[in-house]
Length: 511
Image (cartoon, rainbow, N blue to C red; front, top):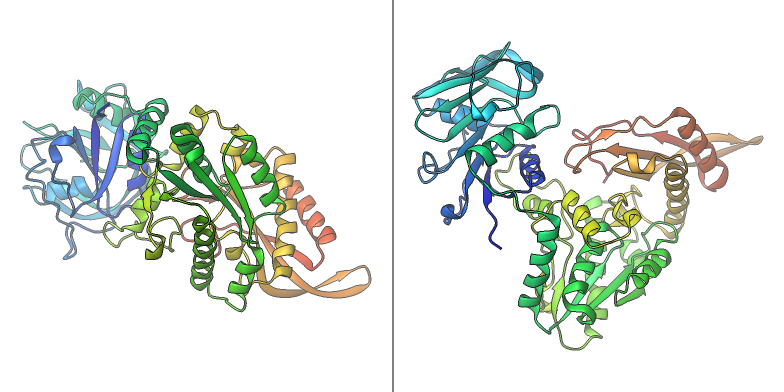
C-alpha cells in the first residue's frame, strides 16, 4: 500500500524530530531530510514542513533552501525559522525582537473562517522560541493570528497553500498544536491517515519476505525494546531462518543475562546466549575515556558476534534494531543541535570482513512507534515498557576505568534502585533510570569505624523521546529508603546522591 508522505526539511532545530513524531501520531507518514538535500522525487510528497533553526535569517550563516519546486506547488507549513525565512526573503522584514519571545504565549487574535485554525479558540496557548520577529509580512502575506507580544504570529500567502507560524505546534506546551497540524495536513493538504502499527507490521513482514526470501538472517539481541521488536517481526516473516545471538558483555544489569535469555526462549525465538564477560572486561582494562570505552565495547561485540556468526552456515543477512532517530542523528542535517552528540553503536561501524547484507525492519520508526508495533505483535507489555538501556551498558555508568569489582558494586546498586521504583509504583512514571558509580571516594562513618568508600549517583528522568528530558521529582521517602538500602547492603558504597540536571544542558547518561 502506498502511503501519503510528508517531507520535513530540517534546519537544525532541536524540535525537528518532534514535528515528525506529531505527524506520525496523526497516522501520517513523515520523513526528515536536511534542508540542503531535498529529495529529487518531490512529487511523491503531499505536503512539506520547514522546521525551526538556531540560525538567524538575518545573519551571514542564514540557511537557504531551494524551494522553487515546492512553493506554490505543494502545501507548505513554515515553522519559526521557516516562517521568518519566507518573510525575510520574499518582500517582508525580520528584525531582532524588542522583547524576549521565549516560552508560553496565548493567541489574542485569530482570523475568522480560517480552516488552518479550525477548532482552535482565541486564548489557546502556544510555545515561542525565537530571538528575531517578523516585522512586516512578505508579499501577498495575510495575517491570520497574533499573540499579545507577537503581532505576526501566523500568516498565509494569498494564492498559495503556504502557511507560516512563529510558534512551535510540535511541543506539548502548544495545547492545540496537534489540531493545527491536523488542520494543515488533513483538511488543507488532503492527506490520508493510514499509517498505523497494524499496517506497518503487515507491510514490513511482506517487505522482509520479499527482500530476504529463504536466506538465513543473524541478529544480535540486546534485551532492549528495539532489538526485541525487530526479532519478533523477523521471526513472523522468516521463522527459523532467523538466528538470534544474545551476548553477555559483563556490563548488563544484575541477573539480566539469564532472565532475558529465558524470556526470549519463551517467546519462541531461535536464540543462543554467549557469555563473553571476561573478553569485554579484558578489552576495557585501564581505559578511562568514554569514547574509547564505547569503541572497545563496540569492537569486542563485533569480534564476539562475528565469531558466533561464523559458526552458522550460509548466513546472508545481518539484522539490526536501528530506529529512525539513530539514522537522523548519525547524519547531521546542519551541524547544529541535531548533530551527533556521541557515537551511536547501531549505525555503521561494521567491519568489512562480515560481508553480510543489512536488514533493518525498524529503520523508519521512532521509539514510541516501536512500542506500539510491539503491542500489535503481542509482546509482553512489561518487556515493551522497559526503560531504555545504553548499548555499552554499565560501561558508561562507571566513570573512569572499569573493573569486575566496580561492575559488581554498580549491579547491586542498580538492582536496589530499579526494584525499588517498581515496588513503589514509580517505574512506569519514569522514562529512564539508572545509577552511576563515581570515580571518587568519600569519608563516612559506619558503626564506630571511619570508612573511605565509593559514591554513587542515582538518575531518573521523564521524557517522551530522549531528545530532551527533565529530572523526576521522586518522593523523599523513596530516596531516603533507597539510599539507606544501598549503603547498608552494598559493600564499597558509603554515599548516595541524586542527579537533578535536565537535558539539555546535561545528557541522560553521564558519559
